[in-house]
Image (tube, rainbow, N blue to C red):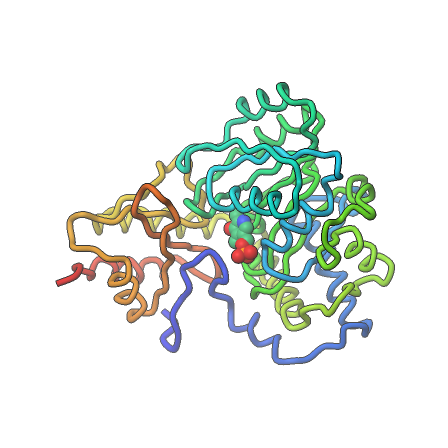
Length: 366
Ligand SMILES: *Cc1c(COP(=O)(O)O)cnc(C)c1O
């Protein structure tokens, strides 16, 4: 345990390494070549993480948190005549709907239960029934519960029916291998402060070039115009359209280096999976039941049901653990009382073991 400060067991911002934090101590000039090369290197490395070639794909960085990236894609890539099918099984799918509502993008939602994966068969029925649907959006790992949706099956269905596939891979990208090009995903969104283990401040979009090329003049926002952002970064390579978050960009470059040093996405995936398994096993020993069955569970974040064997309040439990150096996350379900524990970030097996020792010491409210 890091004694001077708590560990963040939340799905972002998350615990970053000291080396990622240290590189933020320098200031950078946004139009200087050295800085722009850092940006270009990041864009190149992101394509590698996405398993996408530079011939067919491009990486676009966008200021703001992850939702800004989602909003920039939705607002820029769906034409006035388009219609989005939104596949939902949690709060982040719902947020896509909220964005469409505000931006007045025509949409239709398909809502699955929070403990049920998105079904490719259901998606196919909707695509067959409504030819006016042009785009489909889904969340890969729904961070609301930690459920992992069947990316390959759903994207295959979307592409079989020749629609544009938009994937919110915010909480999975860099932590779970995603073969973007092989799957033929059109737009994939993630952000700096999740599995790449950077600090919060920008999002990024892996876009198929033939699709982003069609988006000129389509945006419903100036600042979040994905096409213009891309054009600016292409024409003056590595230059952001408006002020770029320089310290965060520098930290992200370090985080990408550390991802590579760890052994890439495959190695990070193994570490997260191992963290998650230790967590569920030890929490179960301490009397806590996971909300999802193992088969649906992602290695990113785990939802636990409030225990009944002790007198439990989230705030009491939270403060108890915070005093021991661990910060956990409240739940986000309307029908079941739950809390969440994330295991992404610079979190290792020992941290999870120590957390579970602390959990086992918790005896509830007096
Ligand atoms: C974190 C997250 C987002 C973005 O949330 P922000 O708070 O805007 O960074 C979107 N989708 C998913 C699945 C997420 O986990």
